[in-house]
Length: 159
Image (cartoon, rainbow, N blue to C red; front, side, top):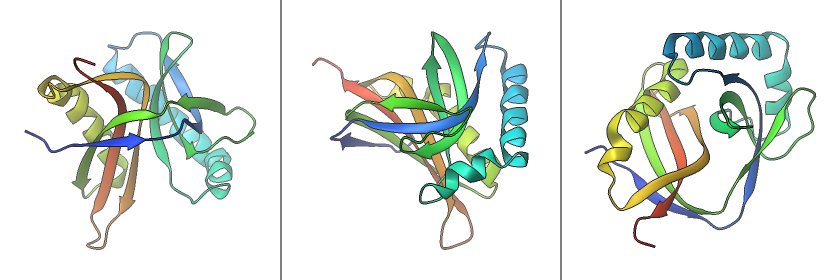
């Protein structure tokens, strides 16, 4: 079983990001292309750098439900007014935190996401993912490898 931890977040928080909505959640190739195009756009036009400059510089890949549709984007912790960005609410509570490591910074968030939604959530019997979103960060560790964590709000089963 993949390792994970349960972490309690005591206060609601916000994240600000740029992203895309998916019309068909199961169109994996199309959604990956849309996400990559959005990342390239906000990198090239400086919007992502503008957001990162307002914070500690830690970027997150964010999955959320916006107006009933799946949304994926890139952003930062906190609430900021930047043209074209959306502010997302994350609620206090218990979070499933899933770590991962890898050599490719750009792929690690997707690898962790795949691991979580590809079976790990079904293995966790004592908690249920409740959303409405999740976020993953990736940063370099001391060995030059990359370390990442996905956090997903969950409720204890039976409460």
